[in-house]
Amino acid sequence: MDIIVDCRSMLCPLPLIETKKAIKSAKKGTIIKIIIDNDTSLSNLKRYLSDNGIDPKYSIKEGNHILVFTAANTQQSLSKPENHCTYEPKTNANNRIAKDYIVVLKSNTMGKGDDTLGKMLMKGFLSTICELDSLPKEVICFNSAVKLAINETATARNLEKLNELGVKITLCGTCVDFFNLKNSIKIGEISNMYYIATTMLNAEYMLEP
Image 1 (cartoon, rainbow, N blue to C red):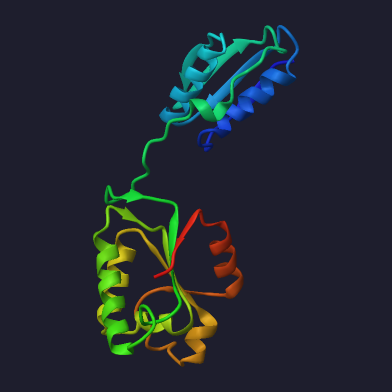
Image 2 (tube, rainbow, N blue to C red):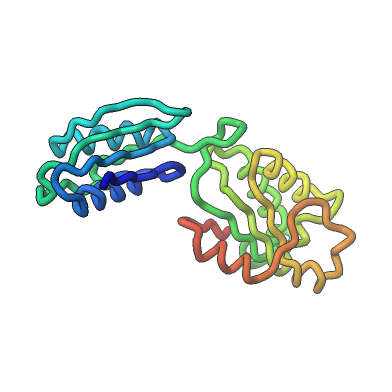
């Protein structure tokens, strides 16, 4: 029975890991067919197979890359998939590098001490984030940080600019209600603590000024 390894929408090293599993589980003579939909994973997988002595037949069908080969020595020692992965930097629609990090703002001021200075620093921080080559994928505001999204403020304009650049802006709904700001918010999606906690938990990196 042939084995089909559907790696569409997967990023390295997942296609290589799934391929390795298929090779290890296949009986000798089994046809293994791998489907991939992005060029980087294709290049990495070709190199992985070649380094392990496997020469697949290659074709393209309906925009997908197809690799087909026959399982031979399924007991062979296969190299680690992670060692064959190279990555292309992700970019957003504005060709800015998009890294897997989020910005978490807990206050409308930056740092502890003088509040007037803290507000100036926060304004400068948000303005600077807009100019970075590596944009966050999301900015989360809770507690008094939701005040940064109030109409006619410089911080709200900076959050709007970030949003236009593809950065999601999320506001704590409980906090918005506590400060009675529902009708004053200029930018941001109102969310709950479950979403905020889950997003923070799953983020690869968090920046907390």
